Length: 309
Image 1 (cartoon, helix red, strand yellow):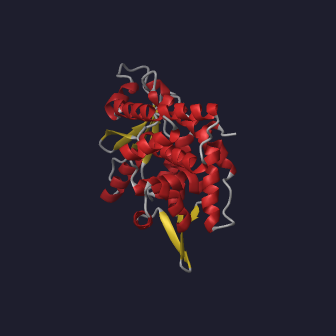
Image 2 (image 1 turned 90 degrees about the vertical axis):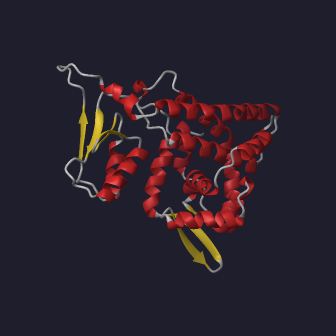
Image 3 (image 1 turned 30 degrees about the horizontal axis):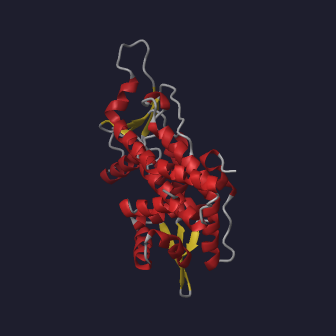
């Protein structure tokens, strides 16, 4: 099986939804190039995935309604950019996607407490939704926790929701003087670790044949065309994003060994390194057809997956 066969099989068996695919392309390809794209270029980038003009327009319209994208017009042309409010979430989410899964545990838990009615029902629901997305679990009514919380990310989240300073945020450890259940037992009750592992294993099963095909192509000199490299890179990040953003990012000490998340990350890294440069050629060409001054990828792009150089 060659790479083009793999692409055709993947798109036939597991075609990505257009709206979610637009989010992936913005995060992986458009943000490094300034975060703005003309509609004509976006149409060109989505075409190899079978997303037609009408479906793409519907997707970006809905993303604009939800506050993810902002639209601007220049005569008959339209451009789309990630809104300032959404940019922080994009940057945080994609930084997490490309970072190695090697968080370690110091034995403590971060707890977010809302036990005195400081938030109204809508605020409580928003905080709960966002903390669950960040990998927290409901420890008890009014208490959410995580064993390896990102302090700056939590601070930014609470500020964005307008509840900073209105919740108790504490760190706690087991007391050695008291006979009690180990805090590590909270993992089994709070997270579906087996479900996350199954997602990673499905990803590995899908993409290991692609890595073999890429390596075979490199060996026999059959270089992947820029458009095909872009499709591979996008499908890779789209699939990896879907499973990785459901991963609560627990410390390695609290995970089963071997943890498939580490294997999935290494697989994604190897594929990305093989295709990113050719994919950039396709992205640059598509962006420059609508905007001759479209910026090249920013320097931070090359830090992905531990360094692309």
